[in-house]
Length: 51
Image (cartoon, rainbow, N blue to C red; front, side, top):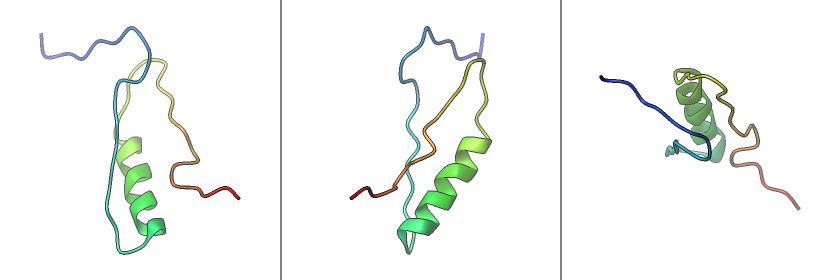
């Protein structure tokens, strides 16, 4: 069938390495833009440090 099916929950993890945290984050968000499925959402605070 060659299709992915999900019933919810976490279904995917995107990781990256970069010379800096900012460069790694940029790669992650670029990868997230290439992924698409119904009701998809992802955190937009990936790698953000909170004090």
